[in-house]
Length: 485
Image (cartoon, rainbow, N blue to C red; front, side, top):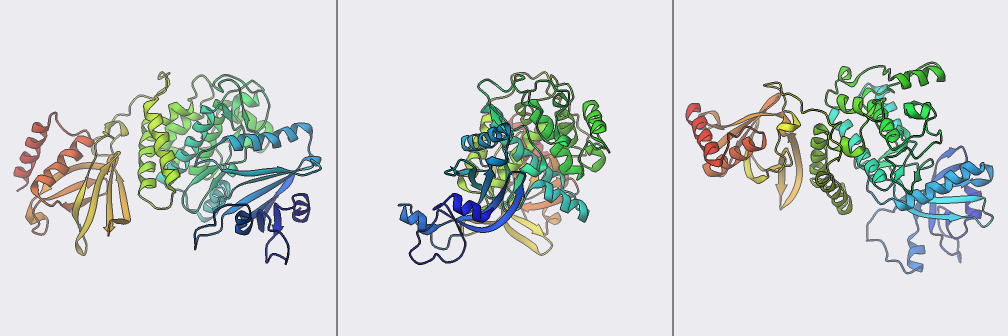
């Protein structure tokens, strides 16, 4: 296919290696082979700087890494008319999408004889979620709930973007969720996707398509379906991410269909150690489409809101993500907050809190912000740190010359309380306070008593422990300090 593609797209593709004397540079240089599909192949390519310079583009910054991309070659001559339509629809749909959690469209071409299509798109350098799940299952190393939640949240943001733009993916599965070594999730493979003229909230589709394990009950029943079929598929993906196995398995296709239609999951996620994700996944795997949520409703689930805040904080506190990526995530979350679901009848009731355990996300005030320098007591003595309270998280960072060199984030859900600490309990340090978390504690020293009291007031207010106005908060802090000495 490589030789065929080079011949079909002259000036666009060439083999790697030195450019022959007198030859004009091609736009992309083939660096490797990625795999074959039913009707084509995927090649790893790089942009050719010489081609860009010859066509008036700015040269890449000195020392920058080459831009690696995927060149997908599709052989239309081997396809039915219906599959040809899907191939063209993939290009059209991907070109419409501009979101950091969706594989980015770069370019597309058609051969002179109309037999081949070439789609150039973003390369995800850590493979796909299906491969990652398989590797972890063999090694016996499941994702933590936070890791699984971050994967889910990024995929959910991508799906919400599609649905807002009247696009249904229609083939969501772990193999179509791509990963990067920087921790980003990229939704891809839009071969069955379609944009509709009207809202995808209605039952607008009727084509049976997708991968059996991920297909929603209404599709199995050959009924017309809406965007909620995508929600079901995302529920299957999230279950599989946590359990490292599909929620519906059977020895035959008929038995698989029966188990999906009746919702017979092999195991629930709370049995696997994912108590926060289980109710979200169970909600998405609701058989009745009228009771199954939309992306907007899932995004406003208390646990998902908390994960979105943590995701935004994590992205903003690392240099792994581009400024554009950070800005888009921030814009997405701001849009979600400003646009709650119109139909709140399906929203789950706030969970009750077990005293002494982790807090519910509904206990947390995500709007309270405070930051400043502190000392942190470690096994090796006091260390200078920067403390930040932001969007329901406590972030302790190592800062050198104004740059964050490393940070640790703890959700306020894990905070059980905070109190002033007498000097004799803080190795003689004044203005000290302690934050008790589930499974441990952190001893900190503020620059002054006033700053210590400000931290305690902010933390108590953010965790829902304040008793009312600021005067009452300060009185409570003074009472606690008196009783501790």
